[in-house]
Image (cartoon, rainbow, N blue to C red):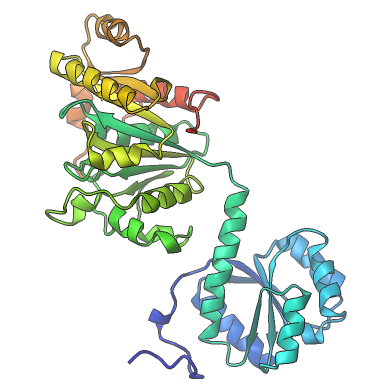
Length: 403
């Protein structure tokens, strides 16, 4: 049976919906309140950065807040040295400041109303648990929105193969590693949203436990902490969001609902500088719904007649459907070693588009890649060409945000 929400006993581990690694301050007199709050903080992954008696001068608490920058304060407002509204104003000093959670030994309506009117976001009384976990979830949403509002949004680039065998998945994965390799503290998400022939898991030598389908289903409760449940860390700065087809056998090749796609991408651009979306091969209903949410499309082709024919077909379809030509970049993969510029020049004349990057047919490097773990071959011709593309991408003005 599920735990009684009115029980005084601590809930089992499964009662916590999230872990919140926050910095927390205590301004509390009642020992019972302090004990229960500290236990709850420990269980949710938070850390107590300071504590004061509730009667401590407000300027002392304000100095600690300025020094430690806690995310939230648990405060026994009924015992503070000033009226609650004045005390909170001193602590925040005109800034947004930490979230204030008012606490009191008893659930007295008058104390609750006074605390909320003074500016507290939550009111808790004994027994603190399990109600505190629900309060922390609500606070988590507030803190997440504050944090992400201050971040510069990342960029979303789709990677589409003109035909099977052009190596778009390898390009997406290694380009993600190249972006992280530029030394600019760039965070990259490689999202394998190819529902037909996913391959990012294989390129990254990864064994994901969750996949994009899980993330789309949970999109309403996504937070930076919960996100760790859905992605697989690959290397420093690079995460993988695996394709559902990597985990579930015979999954239908159907995209999620448009609002779920939009919501997930809107969340992801607050977590990463770059999101590289593997769209698979050709244009189809599944990847077309994803294209509506990306800033740029990298169309990966190869130096053979069939690949170039399919490239033309894709470009014509994009144009007929209103996808601006300026948002499309051609990447020539497996470029022949001699003559180096023949294929690139031919493509530029054929499609009246500049080849954004050319990757050599470096079979020697590819054959020597580890089969046990992912390694980005930065010093090889293959790796250097991808670093060159990555360097072009991070220059201001190379990508235009979608309207």
